[in-house]
Image (cartoon, rainbow, N blue to C red; front, side, top):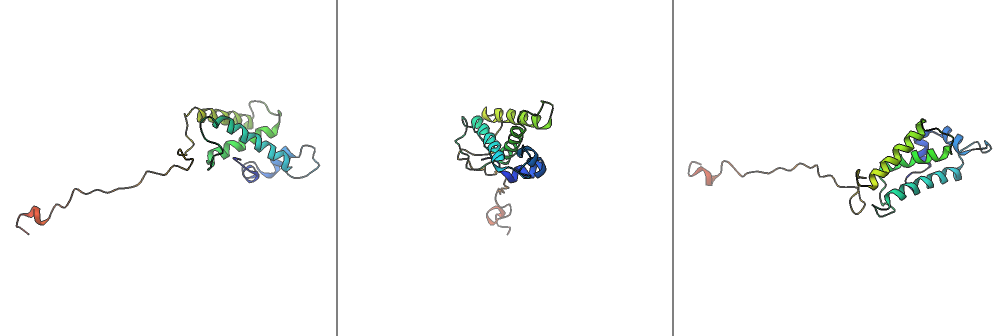
Length: 142
């Protein structure tokens, strides 16, 4: 799974999730089964795009995939109640475009070949050309 209930709640708020998951209004709270189905559908969509390029499941989930999984799951929860001009639909299409680029290698997920977060190489190193004033170079003046 690339996201969970907490991720969805943090991004979209409990009230929106209640409205999207409690379809008949009888529960009065987030319906876990409906939410989990949308999250599973979003994860399957991501796996479908990334499966040809990366070994699945990913050992580390990059935050960018969590965001896209949330956007996909939200779109799936709306269940055809959106037009293409709505914000969730735009975010869905943006996520699909990103996944296509990741599948084609045009964007990177920030993972190395072993699916670990890539180590940073931005470290400072100092080199010296040697001592300017040494006994050997002074030739008897020191």
